[in-house]
Length: 181
Image (cartoon, rainbow, N blue to C red; front, top):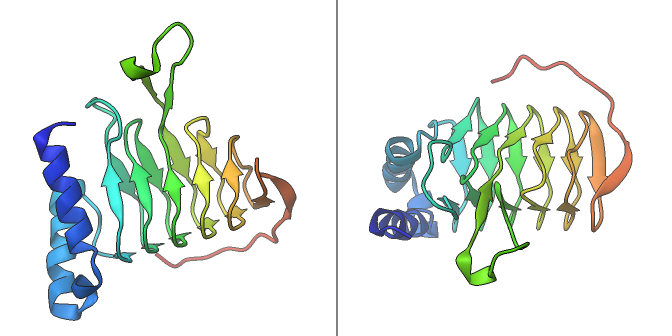
């Protein structure tokens, strides 16, 4: 991990401490996340949030929010393969998202052979508390809900509620239209 990544991780954890939830200090946090990661000001973050590239630097290492979002406490977002987040997405507490896989066939674990994978999260998605999204997942469809504690290992279809380990479809949601940003 490069020195900038370590400094960035430290600053993120400091800036997402409860102290920076206060209005005057919250502006410092929002400004840092905008300058360092292009996170829009309409994304609300809890404390203990970490946005990091857990792999080697590559051109895909970025996160993009298309609109407003709520990011709960202790959320870790890996940007190794690129992460695109739709409008009005809710990350509950302790969500962990990976955008990479490890190649373990023919390599020592210590070689850290990382394969970047991208993830796109559609609009109006709700990720429940303690959700883990593995690097195998490429898309969480619009309007999907991932139940608390689920481990998502496959793509989630639009307007589907999934849950369990590994996550499986539970039922479909009623569709709706929204004009909100």
